[in-house]
Length: 216
Image 1: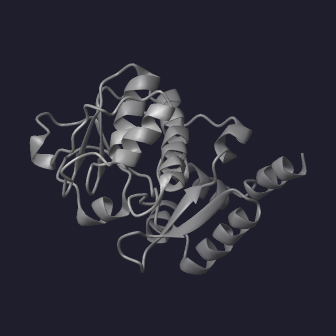
Image 2: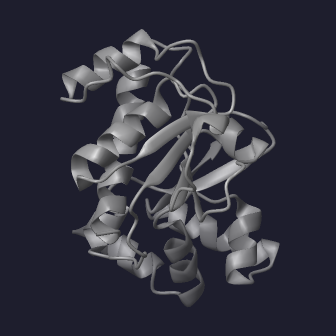
């Protein structure tokens, strides 16, 4: 009860509510939040600290450019408030990461499962095969990646309705598609063991469920 009250109190300010709204579906860098809200740097910093202290947002260092920070909603923050953002119907999203060997494969397969609609995935530098731990972890959650294979951007034949980058390096390197963009700053599991892949899968699953609810 006290935690929920702290969240509502933190969001009682219009500027902090604007920051929250900007983060509902996409992670943002502070500069992007500044552009979206019109706040100066001092005020933005103050409001972000207030939201962090209330457990609404958190920041993480980019896996790509280590000078960059991404701000994201904490898992469950949206559900506690019952907020439903507006988004046009998505027919066929494209999920991208660097190697298309784990995170973007998770996302595309989960999207097909939770929405019963098509999805594609690709990488800026596709690997030779989907990571074995990605296949194993996906199978534990009822998702079959045994026939999946990494693809490059040049293998995507049709323009997607939405591009979702699940990898900081892919997002920061630019994506060659003229479509609306979302970014999810999901830590790269490829250098870790099974828990890193489980964490990436859980992070993406939570975000996918949210996206599917608002893009019906």
